[in-house]
Image 1 (cartoon, one colour):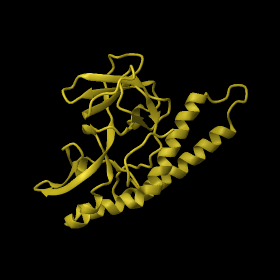
Image 2: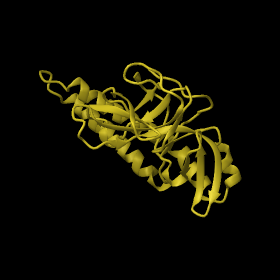
Image 3: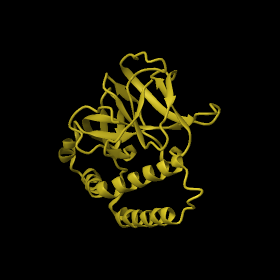
Image 4: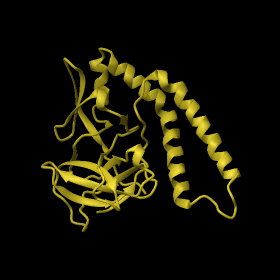
Length: 224
């Protein structure tokens, strides 16, 4: 199974009132990282793997700040009665912990933030829950692409798949579900609110959507 780091622009959905807090956290992180670099022991510098994780975290915070406004606008739009306006999200990619439809194009998978600093393995299950593929997650990766193959490079059939991550060295550790980007094919409203119908027939409430792909006008592709 080939797994590649993914650089697709992404962000976490958050209410508008958190914008100031996110910006403050970003500035604090930048100052702390700069001080750490300036004061590290030249005879015992920061481990390269730890530095990669910090840079990945920095990148994630930066993306969140840059896309916060557009996501706030989306939250306001979908929080109202603008179902017709919400239809503009048909054909766009959204992020959610849900089965994803594999139809040949690579799927972009978000690595859970709490697990990015660990040695991880990606676990792929089919619609019946059977493990059909596993593979290592690159150190410090915030998102990766899965190309639809198993550990031996065999291409799997089209269908619905779920993703999770676990400790690569100990299979007994509890798995953490991983969110995946999927294309919105329809937007509907029911008694509980707005629902995104995704490719493959999966339905996800808007409240469970945690991010969106910006400028996602074409199929997802591998990123180096």
